[in-house]
Length: 316
Image 1 (cartoon, rainbow, N blue to C red):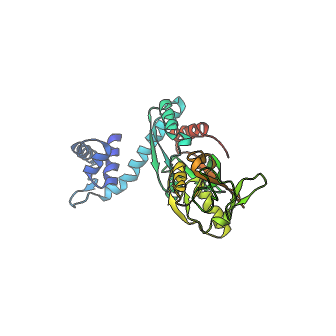
Image 2: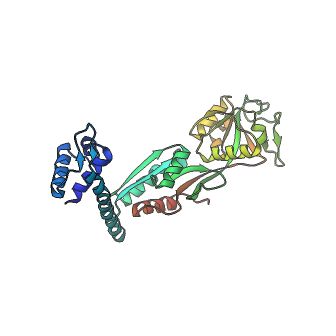
Image 3: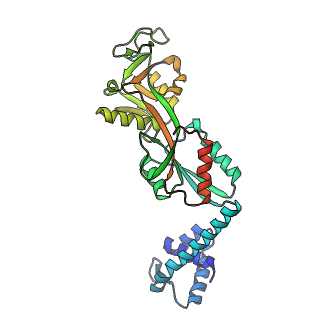
C-alpha cells in the first residue's frame, strides 16, 4: 500500500469522480483508476460502487476512508515538523483583504516573503469583511487585512497598521464651501464652525442629511464612520463609494457630495477642495492585520504572519 494510492482514494471520494480527482491531482485519469484498482486488489475488496452514474463509496470504502485521511495527515505533520526544525518551509499561505491600500505596499510584502521562502505558495484574495473575518477565524485564511472599529472581532488577534484622522472635503461650489475666488474660501459657510485656531469644522451630527462620498465597507475609514454614526443615532447616506481615497476627493471636487477621507488624501486635488475637520467626535480610520487567536496552523503560516507584522507599521 502506497501513500499515493491513499491520496488518490481520498481525492476520488471528495471529488465524487475519477476525472475531477485527476484534474485536482494534475495527473491523467487512467493513472488514478489504475492506482485505485491496485489498492482494491491489495485490500481484497472494492472501495467504490461504479454501477451508478456517480462514484460512491462501498461499505468497505466508508470504513477505510478515515484511516486513509489519518495516514495522510500524519505524513503531512511529520513533514511540517522536519521543515520547521531545518528551517526549510513549504506549504501554502493565504492572505485576505477587503482592499489593497497602496500606502502599505502589499505587493512588496508578498514579494519579500517569496524571496525568503520560495517553496511556500502565496495567495492573496479580496473578500467582503464578514466572509474574510470568518475565513480567518475558521483557518481557511491565515491572515487578513480589514478595517476595524473600537474592538477586535472575537477569536482573533490584531495589529493596527493604519491609523489616520478623518476629515470632510467638499468642492468649491458646495454650499459648505462658502464664497470662493478659485482658492479656499475666506469666509465661513453656513453650518460650518471654526475652532479656536480658525480651522473650519463640521460636527458628525451635521453629516446626517448629507450625500456622502466614502470608502466601501470593510475599510478602516468606513468602519469608523459607520460606528460613530450608529452611536449618534443615524445611518450615513453614502451616495458614492470608491476604493481609492484620491477618487473620493475627485468626486467631491466635482460637486457630487461631501467626501469623508483620510487626512493624508486631501493633498490630491487640494486646490479644488474645502477641507473641514469632523468634530464631536473626531474620527480616526483604522485598518488591522487579523489572525486566529489560537495561533497559525503551521510553520509556513507562522512565518508569514511574523513577516507581515514586522514589515508593516504597528499602531496597536
